[in-house]
Image (cartoon, rainbow, N blue to C red; front, top):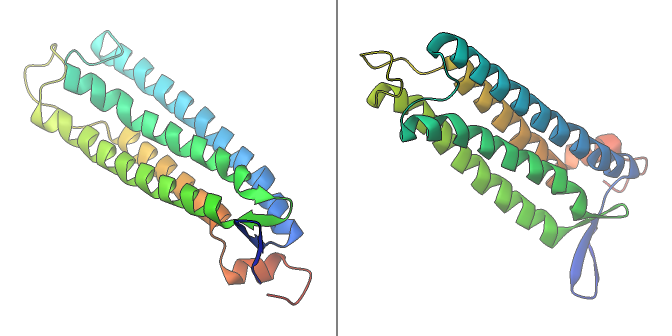
Length: 175
C-alpha cells in the first residue's frame, strides 16, 4: 500500500502508530539527553572525588571522557528528528531512509568511540596522580553503550516499523 504524490513516496501508517512515533520520539530523545547529562555529571563528580579534578590530565583521556556521550547525544537528536519522517499519518520513505542511514552511521561511530574510551585507560596513563595504568570506568562505558543501543533501536522502530507492528496498531485489516 504505497502511494506517490509528486516525487515523494509515502507509506500509510495506522493512526495509533503515527501518534506513537510523534510522541514516543520526543519522550525517548529527551530522556536520552537528560540521562546522558546526568550520567556525565555523575561521572565527572565521582572522578573529581577520586582524583581531585573532574577530567583526565591527558588529551586522549579527555577525548575518551567526552566523545562517547556526544555520540549518544547525536543519536538522541536523530531520534527526535524521527518526527520529520511523518506527513500526517504517512511515512515519507526518503526521509525515513535518510534517518535510518544516519542512525546506523551514528550508532557505529558511537560504538567505536565507546570501544576507544574503554581502551584508552588501558593503553595510556590518563591521570597523573596514579603511576600505573588503570582499568576503564565500567559504569560509564556500559551505561553509554546501553543508552546508545536503546536510542538506536527506538529510532529504527520508529522509521522502519515491521508489518507485525503495523498490524498490532492497525484498526483496519489492510496490513
